[in-house]
Length: 186
Image (cartoon, rainbow, N blue to C red; front, side, top):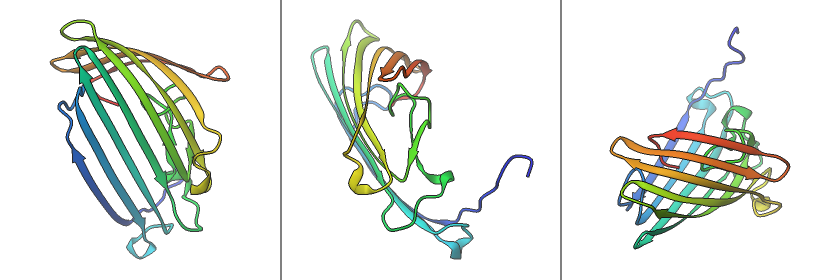
Protein backbone atom coordinates (compact mmCIF):
# COMPACT_ATOMS: atom_id res chain seq x y z
CA UNK A 1 0.00 0.00 0.00
CA UNK A 2 0.90 3.67 -0.10
CA UNK A 3 1.72 3.72 3.61
CA UNK A 4 3.97 0.67 3.56
CA UNK A 5 3.31 -2.91 4.60
CA UNK A 6 0.30 -3.64 6.77
CA UNK A 7 0.17 -6.26 9.49
CA UNK A 8 -2.78 -7.89 11.17
CA UNK A 9 -2.48 -8.28 14.92
CA UNK A 10 -4.72 -10.29 17.20
CA UNK A 11 -3.95 -11.76 20.56
CA UNK A 12 -4.36 -11.75 24.30
CA UNK A 13 -2.77 -9.23 26.65
CA UNK A 14 -2.39 -9.31 30.41
CA UNK A 15 -1.05 -6.59 32.64
CA UNK A 16 -0.53 -6.13 36.36
CA UNK A 17 0.55 -2.91 38.09
CA UNK A 18 1.57 -2.09 41.65
CA UNK A 19 1.95 1.67 41.99
CA UNK A 20 3.16 2.99 45.36
CA UNK A 21 4.69 6.24 44.07
CA UNK A 22 3.94 9.45 45.96
CA UNK A 23 3.64 11.44 42.72
CA UNK A 24 2.64 10.55 39.19
CA UNK A 25 4.90 13.27 37.74
CA UNK A 26 8.14 13.60 39.76
CA UNK A 27 8.26 10.87 42.42
CA UNK A 28 10.25 11.32 45.61
CA UNK A 29 9.34 8.09 47.43
CA UNK A 30 7.81 4.76 46.62
CA UNK A 31 7.91 1.99 44.06
CA UNK A 32 6.28 1.01 40.78
CA UNK A 33 6.09 -2.43 39.16
CA UNK A 34 4.37 -3.31 35.90
CA UNK A 35 4.31 -6.75 34.30
CA UNK A 36 2.77 -7.24 30.87
CA UNK A 37 2.43 -10.18 28.56
CA UNK A 38 1.21 -10.52 25.01
CA UNK A 39 0.24 -13.67 23.13
CA UNK A 40 -0.19 -13.11 19.40
CA UNK A 41 -2.46 -15.79 17.95
CA UNK A 42 -3.19 -16.55 14.33
CA UNK A 43 -6.58 -17.93 15.46
CA UNK A 44 -7.46 -14.35 16.50
CA UNK A 45 -6.45 -12.90 13.12
CA UNK A 46 -2.74 -12.23 13.66
CA UNK A 47 -0.26 -12.66 10.83
CA UNK A 48 2.31 -14.10 13.27
CA UNK A 49 2.13 -16.25 16.42
CA UNK A 50 4.53 -15.31 19.22
CA UNK A 51 4.63 -14.27 22.86
CA UNK A 52 6.51 -11.62 24.79
CA UNK A 53 6.74 -10.48 28.41
CA UNK A 54 7.95 -7.19 29.85
CA UNK A 55 8.77 -6.03 33.39
CA UNK A 56 9.26 -2.41 34.45
CA UNK A 57 10.20 -1.69 38.06
CA UNK A 58 11.39 1.49 39.76
CA UNK A 59 12.19 2.64 43.28
CA UNK A 60 12.52 6.18 44.69
CA UNK A 61 13.76 7.36 48.08
CA UNK A 62 14.23 10.88 49.43
CA UNK A 63 16.01 12.29 52.46
CA UNK A 64 15.88 16.06 52.81
CA UNK A 65 16.64 17.58 49.41
CA UNK A 66 18.30 14.41 48.03
CA UNK A 67 16.43 11.82 45.94
CA UNK A 68 17.94 8.54 44.73
CA UNK A 69 16.13 6.41 42.19
CA UNK A 70 16.66 3.23 40.26
CA UNK A 71 14.91 1.16 37.65
CA UNK A 72 15.11 -2.33 36.25
CA UNK A 73 13.36 -2.99 32.94
CA UNK A 74 13.44 -6.11 30.84
CA UNK A 75 11.62 -7.97 28.15
CA UNK A 76 11.85 -11.48 26.76
CA UNK A 77 10.39 -13.45 23.91
CA UNK A 78 10.59 -17.10 24.95
CA UNK A 79 10.50 -19.92 22.47
CA UNK A 80 12.08 -20.46 19.10
CA UNK A 81 10.22 -17.80 17.13
CA UNK A 82 11.72 -14.36 16.60
CA UNK A 83 9.50 -11.38 17.23
CA UNK A 84 8.23 -9.77 14.03
CA UNK A 85 10.03 -6.50 13.31
CA UNK A 86 6.85 -4.49 13.93
CA UNK A 87 6.58 -5.74 17.54
CA UNK A 88 10.19 -5.97 18.74
CA UNK A 89 11.28 -4.27 21.95
CA UNK A 90 12.58 -0.76 21.26
CA UNK A 91 15.23 1.12 23.21
CA UNK A 92 16.36 4.69 22.80
CA UNK A 93 14.90 7.99 23.89
CA UNK A 94 14.62 9.70 27.24
CA UNK A 95 14.67 7.13 30.05
CA UNK A 96 15.51 4.25 27.72
CA UNK A 97 19.18 4.69 26.76
CA UNK A 98 18.74 8.42 26.43
CA UNK A 99 21.84 9.04 24.27
CA UNK A 100 20.19 7.11 21.42
CA UNK A 101 17.27 8.15 19.23
CA UNK A 102 13.89 6.71 20.14
CA UNK A 103 13.70 3.15 18.82
CA UNK A 104 17.29 3.16 17.53
CA UNK A 105 18.02 -0.18 19.24
CA UNK A 106 15.58 -3.04 18.79
CA UNK A 107 15.41 -6.75 19.41
CA UNK A 108 13.67 -9.83 20.76
CA UNK A 109 15.00 -9.48 24.33
CA UNK A 110 16.36 -6.61 26.41
CA UNK A 111 17.51 -5.63 29.87
CA UNK A 112 18.03 -2.11 31.22
CA UNK A 113 19.28 -0.79 34.57
CA UNK A 114 19.07 2.88 35.56
CA UNK A 115 20.53 4.59 38.65
CA UNK A 116 19.94 8.28 39.26
CA UNK A 117 19.90 11.19 41.64
CA UNK A 118 18.36 14.63 41.83
CA UNK A 119 18.77 17.49 44.28
CA UNK A 120 15.95 19.92 45.06
CA UNK A 121 17.36 23.42 44.42
CA UNK A 122 14.20 25.28 45.40
CA UNK A 123 10.47 24.82 45.55
CA UNK A 124 10.15 23.43 42.00
CA UNK A 125 13.69 23.11 40.54
CA UNK A 126 15.72 19.89 40.71
CA UNK A 127 19.19 19.21 39.33
CA UNK A 128 20.48 15.70 38.75
CA UNK A 129 21.12 12.92 36.35
CA UNK A 130 21.20 9.21 35.77
CA UNK A 131 23.30 6.47 34.23
CA UNK A 132 21.91 3.56 32.25
CA UNK A 133 23.24 0.21 31.11
CA UNK A 134 21.27 -1.91 28.66
CA UNK A 135 21.52 -4.75 26.19
CA UNK A 136 19.33 -5.84 23.31
CA UNK A 137 19.87 -9.51 22.52
CA UNK A 138 18.65 -12.26 20.20
CA UNK A 139 18.39 -14.77 23.05
CA UNK A 140 17.23 -14.20 26.66
CA UNK A 141 20.46 -15.75 28.00
CA UNK A 142 22.51 -12.99 26.31
CA UNK A 143 20.76 -10.03 27.99
CA UNK A 144 23.65 -9.46 30.44
CA UNK A 145 26.39 -9.52 27.79
CA UNK A 146 28.08 -6.46 26.28
CA UNK A 147 25.89 -3.65 27.67
CA UNK A 148 25.70 -0.13 26.25
CA UNK A 149 26.18 2.70 28.77
CA UNK A 150 24.71 6.22 28.76
CA UNK A 151 24.93 9.18 31.13
CA UNK A 152 22.35 11.95 31.34
CA UNK A 153 22.38 15.33 33.13
CA UNK A 154 19.03 17.00 33.74
CA UNK A 155 17.33 20.06 35.16
CA UNK A 156 13.71 19.43 36.15
CA UNK A 157 11.00 21.94 37.00
CA UNK A 158 8.14 20.27 38.89
CA UNK A 159 5.36 22.61 37.70
CA UNK A 160 1.65 22.47 38.51
CA UNK A 161 1.05 21.31 34.91
CA UNK A 162 3.63 18.52 35.01
CA UNK A 163 7.41 18.20 34.96
CA UNK A 164 9.58 20.09 32.49
CA UNK A 165 12.84 18.26 31.73
CA UNK A 166 15.89 19.85 30.14
CA UNK A 167 18.39 17.05 29.62
CA UNK A 168 21.56 16.16 27.76
CA UNK A 169 22.72 12.59 27.31
CA UNK A 170 25.88 11.02 25.93
CA UNK A 171 27.32 7.59 25.19
CA UNK A 172 30.36 6.08 23.53
CA UNK A 173 30.96 6.41 19.79
CA UNK A 174 29.54 9.91 19.58
CA UNK A 175 25.93 9.21 20.54
CA UNK A 176 24.43 12.44 21.92
CA UNK A 177 20.86 13.64 22.44
CA UNK A 178 19.34 16.76 23.99
CA UNK A 179 15.80 16.86 25.36
CA UNK A 180 13.15 19.37 26.26
CA UNK A 181 10.20 17.32 27.50
CA UNK A 182 7.08 18.57 29.20
CA UNK A 183 4.47 16.62 31.11
CA UNK A 184 5.73 13.07 31.28
CA UNK A 185 7.93 11.07 33.60
CA UNK A 186 10.49 8.54 32.45
